[in-house]
Length: 327
Ligand SMILES: Nc1ncnc2c1ncn2[C@@H]1O[C@H](COP(=O)(O)OP(=O)(O)OP(=O)(O)O)[C@@H](O)[C@H]1O
Image 1 (cartoon, rainbow, N blue to C red):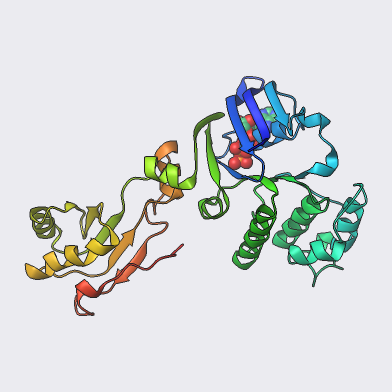
Image 2 (cartoon, helix red, strand yellow):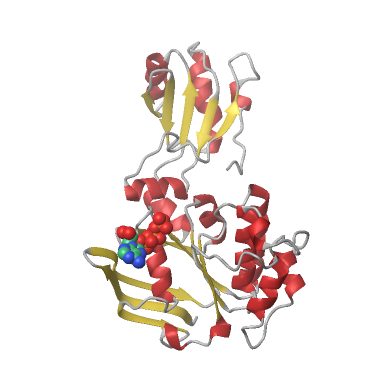
């Protein structure tokens, strides 16, 4: 497969700050590549480097050429911050930016694709932040680029709007558009990206498919069982060869597959230990991110967890089944 983007030894300094540090990266034609990393990790700077909007050290080719030499018609770029003229309507803006290219998509089609058909005739400045972002996404798409760079495309867009934008990006990807996007939403990246690169302090510290990264760095699935008898529960589960550790009011059982959940709770029932809710979670990209960046947050590890059963007086624990798809 041809490479749409190749970066070799790319670095960018701002004075003493090393924003991007010796990054090697390639993105194949038709691939969706997600860039993740903490604030200040260098994502925007790398996107700017790849699009030729900031000079850098190292080598970058886009479709085999220097980024600055690539025909504008072939690249779409949604910068992280973009403020089009405020007293133009959404329709006028799409029309205007479309007119800057040799060929452009139909304005109404773009407005509808980004969910702005109904508010097409409102001034940009009167739109909500999320609606403004949708218009900006529309502007990035207007030249029907075969390589699309999106720097935090869904920031400020509501959940329904995000879902429809994800569907739109999936359609574009299915149609062969190469997409490089940055995001702080691991759900977004996990859903859209074929491969993910994690930047930290300017360095690309991990690259792989979401599944590969989760396999290597995501840790194990966990079953968390609420119980006031945590110590006794750990003893019983350990005797039954489960890897259990006690918290103050819960037991965490590592490495439990969905089909083993019933076995684990049956152990507790057998020895008469009462338990409350069960939550089973499988590792996600969020766990990879937290593991590799060393960051934490209050709900670490629970991002994709699913409560699977209620108190002891509810249906038999062995009937508890994990549910897929919780986000
Ligand atoms: N124009 C600039 N002048 C000076 N320093 C800059 C400039 N642009 C970025 N930096 C610095 O480079 C580093 C990387 O910034 P960058 O915006 O690329 O990070 P990011 O990963 O996109 O962050 P965020 O997630 O907050 O958008 C930061 O330390 C930032 O302060």
